[in-house]
Image (tube, rainbow, N blue to C red):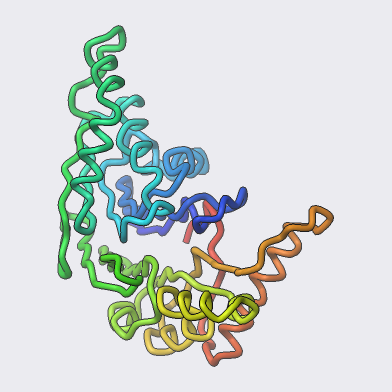
Length: 291
């Protein structure tokens, strides 16, 4: 039974047309485990299903984990709750996240009360279970286990917001997902010798061009490429994959070849990681990549 990491969205709060909101899926055989659910999450899952990942057929999305409650990581929550139900999911969504996830869940259910009532009691006669959510607020340690995966949550540092990274252990792989975080020893520890480390990153040269207050903020809540190199040196994953890449340089000139410029910046980030001393395998993750 093969384990895969599928990137559904690799973006940031910026409305980048080529990078959907942050979301990834650890897929073990015919079962998928989502991490975060940015804008467009179910449609991205449907695209992955069309590419041959059967576990990401929308009605099969039943287990999800939330790293933190920032909007770019959760704006697709209502989509994840309701769209698979409309497509005949027949069991509740199991959700694991930080303090506040239950309250968020409750408010979303209330916001869509009219829709829920119509779908159940109106013409459609949808099932009465698939829109429900079993939301659990987590603490560090093993938070989920079944016959295919063990999921461990560990605290990361993203300002004052309660935030977690996740370590997935399956029969054939160990995959660690950082969430949004400053560079931390605990990430290197949990990811030591793992198969895949999926980690956020900032373009160091881009940040250096911003005013001091923003440099201070971003250094405290995110991970510069040069600092990610140090984390990876300690962890020594078989493969380092970057996502949630923050470039700090908006493209405002409509005469610029956007794709070429983004490719240049992505290559520059990889070069910064290599120049900082990391010699292992590293790639920039793109939406719908499968590892």
